[in-house]
Length: 209
Image (cartoon, rainbow, N blue to C red; front, side, top):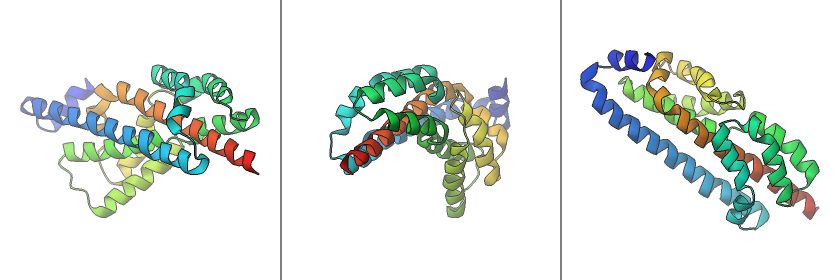
C-alpha cells in the first residue's frame, strides 16, 4: 500500500513504532489546534462583534456541526446549516448569501490542518524547515484552502501545492492517509462553524444599522 511504501522510504520496519507514535502526536496536535481555533479564537471574534455568548449560539447550530462531522463535506451540510442558522435568529437573506459563499471559500479549519500536516511530513522525512519556510507554509496553506472544494478529502488535493512550495516530497501525503478520514471530519466541522459565526456577525451588524 501507499502507506507501507512511505514507511519503507523513511526507514523501513524499524521505524514503524516511532512513526505510529509520531502519528498519534500529530493527530493530537491537529485536534488541539482545531479546538483552540474553534472554542477560543472563533468564539472570541463572535463575542467581540455581537457581545453575546458564543457557546449559546453554537448550541443553536449544533445539528449543522454534527452533520458536517458525519459527512465531511461543508457543501453537503449546507441545507442543514441554512436551516439551523436561520432558526437561530440570523436574517434569512444574510444566511442565504454568506453560507454558500463560506462553504466555498471559508476553509479556516482546512488551512490550519494543512499547515500542521505539512510540518509533520517534513519532520517525518527529516527535513529542517527555516523561518521563511514556515511563513511560506502558512501563507500557501491559507491560499490553498480557499481553493479547496467543500467535499471529503479536498484538503489532501490542495495540500500538494503547500508541499511543493517548500520542496517537500508530495508522496509524503501517504504518511497521513491512515488518519485523515477522521481529521477531515473534524476540520469540516470547524469550517462550518466559521461559516455560521460569520453569518451571525454580519446579521447582527446589519441589525445595528
